Image (cartoon, rainbow, N blue to C red; front, top):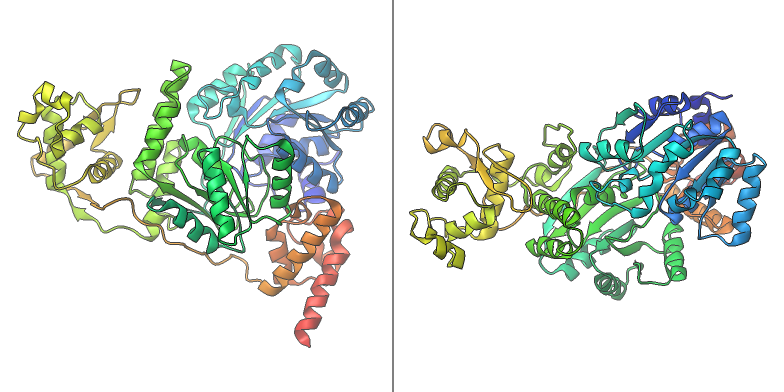
Length: 597
């Protein structure tokens, strides 16, 4: 039996594990139940792929996305791994062939949808094949506290009684501590080991831009990145179709992708994107792309996502290869109103959680604190701020003394008894003739209308800053109430000054193209990309499965001349070296010869 590290080097061509990967793998191979929280791009898949390879025993992977299964199985087979999938996307004969291979002991890694796995006959076949580990990907889907609850996941809790001796590995990229607790409870895990990686994606530049003429903003953003692969997310199918048409009129290679399209059309569009015939995919936020494409250079949200978890997961589809990438969001307050209206009906308990998540997402969008700091602290991870790679830190707004405005706000909250949310307090400050204000007599307060020199958006912005600085807090729930902390008294007594930013909207984001970490020959890189695309077309697989951008950059930097030299590069395993090595060495030699002519 190979060690996990030997399998990693032989199959994937990587010299070492990242973060907690090795600990997770060893715990799972040792028979422990495990819950692992790892951000997109941190290598979750290796945590269940390596045990199957090292042990040469069956590992079953539960995945909700057929497209993602296909991408991973295609890539693993190219690397010599005995991987297979069984799902509704294959015909009856294909699924029968997989089951026959499983019975013959010819499958080490089997992907299945949750509803398929929970069929009694299927579980019996898996049990007979000697399943060694069950890995549940996107495990947050089992929890109603998660941002993407799926009812088909709810039966997975039965696995403990059906396969009591088989350890389980639950993996997710986005979960709060509350969600992680619920995952353990729903799956009936036994004394699970819990691993939490850093949520930080330092290669991603986060930026939030006030939505003005959204159609023009989207076209301008995408056009300025014409050589890059990107995803544009929109809220509705109609918006997807409109944005796609706008981009095409601008001469941009773009296609739409949403749940209202025929499956054959979605498949064609996705294949075009994976093979780099299509540069930009425009998709609905609610419809998961389910892709494993490593070289998506940007994600642009045309609308606010419904939760910070959703935002984090969707932006995480950029820069999975670790290279500099961008996550931009066009935001307006109207997006929050739309999100709240979409969850008004249905299960009251779900609607309550969903509304709170939407409000927290809006607070994140309106904040003028370091994006990375706010994002990481939402997931319970401390960050000092000033990340140097978000719009707030790169284009930091000028801070002013806002003590007088803070005192005005605190006195208004005091006068109204600290019984109301920020929207009501702001209405009193700006002098609104709202019927409830008149009914309660708050139009007769000394603070009524005292803040009319700022508009409501500016007041919301200032309140966010005061919350970030620890002066205010929100009680949460369906009807959050704004409360003052003790330190507000020092401000009112003129013992402490307050700094803040008064702006018309959020700080503007400047396109920031970071220099690559590797100094490589850009012309050679493009030459190798062309070869990669040709090979991918020949083998009917996505381009990035052949080699990722990082590996091509290393080739273009080191210009290896032998197979031994090529094997030293990260991402070049034995199977790929044998399959593609000579062709890439030939391409490098061809480019060098042309350069010398």
